Structures are given as C-alpha cells and as structure tokens.
Length: 44
Image (cartoon, rainbow, N blue to C red):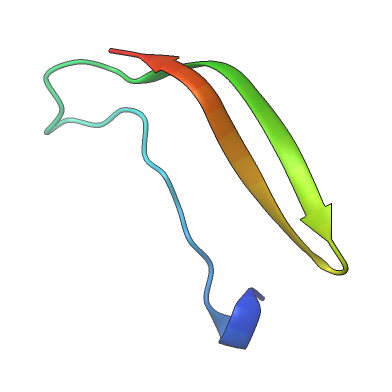
C-alpha cells in the first residue's frame, strides 16, 4: 500500500500511445518506508 493506501503509476507504452516512452536514466530514492523512481532522462 502507498501513502494513505494509494500508489502512483507512470505508463510508458500502450495502445493509445503513438510512440513508446523509453526511460534512459533513473534513480530510486527511499525515505523511511516510501520510495520514488526519479526519471532523469527519457525519450520518445
């Protein structure tokens, strides 16, 4: 479960997308029991 029971998502490809989003560089950051994926570079 996420904060307050909610989780966030980031979709990189799907049938309604014209092009795929490619994550080239990312970093995972943690603070206590929560974490985020920091996208540093992406391309379409």
